[in-house]
Amino acid sequence: MKNNIIYVPIGVPTFHMPSAEAAFKASLACVKAIVPDIIHPKGILFSTQDVETFVKAAHPDGIILQHVTFANAAFATAVFRHSKAPVFLWTLPEPVIDGGRLRLNSLTGAFSAGHAFKACHGGYIKHLVGGPDDPQLISSLETFVKAVQAKADLRHLKLASIGHPPQGFGFGQAIDTEMARTFGVELLTIESRELTQQARQLDLNIAEKASQEAHTKMKGLDTVPTENRDAFIKLYHVYKTYVETHGIKAIASRCWPDFFTDYGTPVCSVLGLLNDQMVAAACEADAYGALSMYIGQFLTGKPTYLGDPVSIDKAENTITFWHCGTAACSLARADLGAVTGVHPNRQIGPTMEFGLKPGKKATLFRVGRLPDGTFRFFIAKAEILDKPQQFLGTSLVAKVGPPVEKLINMLVTDGWEPHFVVLYDDVSEALIDLAGMLGLPVITPKECKQHG
Image 1 (spheres, rainbow, N blue to C red):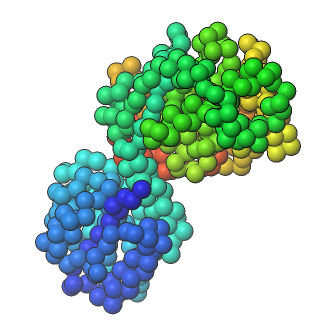
Image 2: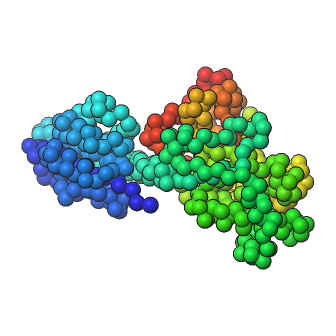
Image 3: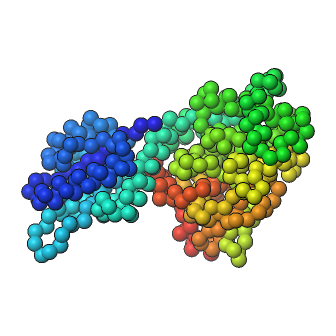
């Protein structure tokens, strides 16, 4: 999906133009490498009128504003008057410090822009000093761009709530207007029985493609009783057809008790296979868990894992995340693969039954809803250890930075939901950027010192 990200190089011609032109060309090459279709002017914009004309025509989703040379606050104000898009304010270092002329004076321009932003924008701004070959600058630009793309993408996301959460699991219940107001997401709702009824009536032969996919990805599916295996395959076909027909990229599905007591077969493996297809699929009808999974999936380009924190090890400084059996097959440990099992409490299959693969860089993430209908992000860096399956179902062991007991105390006493998403990459900076763009507070393990 195309996003309008613009590069706005501003300056005045009374500074050292050879240095400015060289900086502009190198900077343009830098941003083009990150955003090949970035919208940019042919050269440095030397007047507020040129700035206004350029910004008004672009309708940006994100702005990279660079003082190639000093420019007073009127230039930045011309940008902010016409767009409230998130801003990456890029300051160039002085090319030469030799006791002679100040060639660019980009930093003073950044202060002027920062002051103007505070006065007349009110959105999200990120600032960094660095040249176009600075690895930190490039990395920071990349994460900013990814966050801009994620924010824009959310406006096109259809998230389906299939059934409602069980009693006592109200934390997963979403309100459509809140979802739209804060994230721009369209929330669809359907009763789970509508899909189970379709599955019951479906001719198994119609689900042949779904059957082939399931048998290819799930080890031991043939050991499941035929009645349950067939019911699962038909249910997967119905779910997959529903999301494809309606353009849905994330679902929050009811699971227990209905799928055991009424349909007779769990939905766990259906959700696992959908996660493998990059449809973020959360169980227990946790809509904001599904949203968390989708955001993580967008930023990493990989399936994510939704789990309960069920155990800690103070000596190893780890948290075990577990759920009944919904993980994506591609996240299974390579030594055993995506083994098929039965639900640990209900003893009905098929469910996913494996430990998850390790990952050196990971992120723990949750979109949390507060009682007043506002939202916050929990973000923490982690490492997924090379550990076997911890409990029946699916599980992983995550090593965290702060003392694990303090982290858990903070999460419990601050009222966080009992589902967290584990992402197979460190995208913490992009998540922080995204939170800022959405106007949401971020809670990180830094706050653990208050919860000793």
